[in-house]
Amino acid sequence: QVQLVESGGGLVQAGDSLRLSCAASGRTFSTYNMAWFRQAPGKERDFVAAIRWSGGTTYYADSVKGRFTVSRDNAKNTVWLQMNSLKPEDTAVYYCAASRWFYGPESHDYNYWGQGTQVTVSS
Image 1: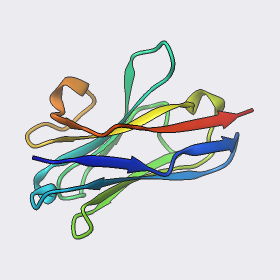
Image 2: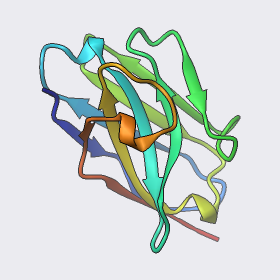
Image 3: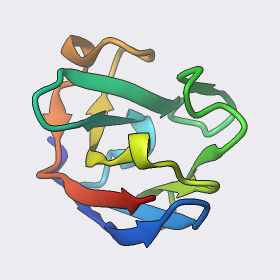
């Protein structure tokens, strides 16, 4: 089992950068594929980025490709989402999620979720 805690959200201006962190508990973190999702008010939860358990493969939503970077350090039980050139439409609650067996953009494939961290981008 994995417990996830996100941090690093905040209020920034358009064009700024933020780095979100997701700290995981448990000794098996290195065996989990990880992902970031986001949910804006009144909208469904959308996929942002994913990274395989080894860190060797990443996958991004088209809306963030080239601006966001997902990375992980299995020794630190942490995954990060570096967000650059932020836009007002990036405003949402950001969640990290873990899946032992799946990797990709489908939220139902992920078994474990954090509580989320709010990112607000002003214009």
